[in-house]
Amino acid sequence: MATEFAAPKQTRYDVVIIGGAMYGSSVAWWLSDNADFDGSVLVVERNPTYENSSTACTNSCIRQQFSNEINVRVSQFGAEFIKNFKQFMGNDDRVPDVVLQSYGYMYLADTPEFAATLREAQEVQQGLGAGTKFMTADEIAEAYPFYNLDGIVGANHNLVDEGYFDGNTLFDWWKRSAKERGVEYLTNEVTAMAKSADGSRVESVTLATGEIISCGSVVNCAGPRAVLTSRMAGIEVPVEPRKRYTYIFAAEKALDRDLPLTIDPSGVHMRTDGQYYLAGCPPDEDPAVDYDDFIEDHSIWEEKAWPAIANRIPQFEAIKLVNSWAGHYAFNTLDQNAIIGPHTEVENFIFVNGFSGHGFQQSPAMGRGVAEWIAHGEYRTLDLSPFGYDRVAEGRKFLEKAVI
Image 1 (cartoon, one colour):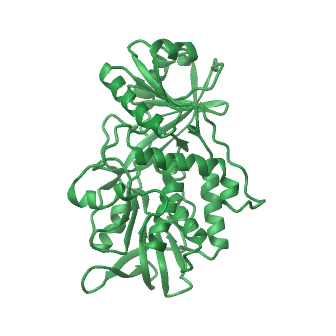
Image 2 (cartoon, helix red, strand yellow; image 1 turned 90 degrees about the vertical axis):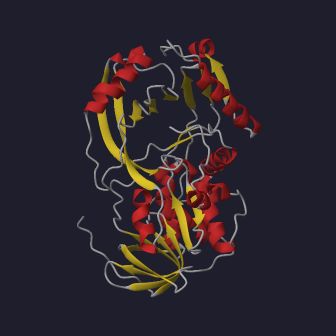
Image 3 (tube, helix red, strand yellow; image 1 turned 180 degrees about the horizontal axis):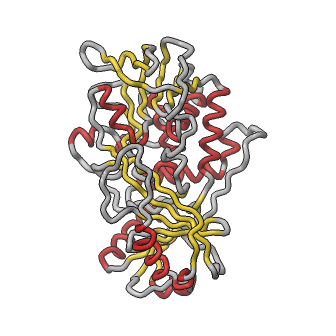
């Protein structure tokens, strides 16, 4: 990576954020928007092109179809933020409106047991005001006659505030607005941290260019590289890069209506993507990969994705692959859910890690919550404590049944 590193403007900052992509910029912007916070913020980003970052490789979808209440509420705020983005950004005339294309998720169940799990989740979602409905196979066929429903016993579907949005617009404006409000973005890399004598605080970070920066708080927004950052403070976090594949394809015979983001029992998902369609899936063997490994395995398209697509939607037997890429999930190996908030012992080391594919949709609520914690020492809107590091220290899983 031929990137020229720069020197910081100051020797001390109240908050040093490591990683400037979606989450680094979300936390930075929410701090700049918090009337009770007037501290200095430094965002250190090793690659300002963001090439191959999870932010650059995202599929930018949002759903309320989770089984855990706090995950539902986090996404509900995400939908509110997206639909009212310009208002949240102070009605700045330069800021565009962001459209949430609510064609919904379609979670397909191929066993009575999974159908029962979907029904339980639907009750949770409905109780929180989500528009999720459980559909029988006959109801699915009536609404979406293009599916092959052999072996499908039911599904959950929601057409309210669930679908696709342009997440990169949020990212771009968070970054731009934060800079205009005084947040410093620095092209550099944190290579070391120094803690207090009792180990309770990170007192400074060292940059690749040699500068030592004193800090009030350190925020880990390093995405799939989270553990490389936490180890500088002597902390382990169960986050590793897992490869995920995305495919854009054209259909010889386009569908006559939007394709919901369909989660097939095979593990392949697919949805409308403008004039094209998007599909994605994990590999069948899903190990951690090297941080710089973005090489595609083209057999996954030929042997897994395409057969599943054509089986579920026979009209897609004649399709043409237009584009594809491999990106990384910041995969939480403990329970595939976010790790948010301060460390249990190093009190000013703050996690924003391990989203396991939920990152873009959760970024408005999580960025706001972390900014609240930094400014007030507590969460003041949504209580994000269930995502705390204490569960990692105890080996206690956050239970979420609706993980893709």
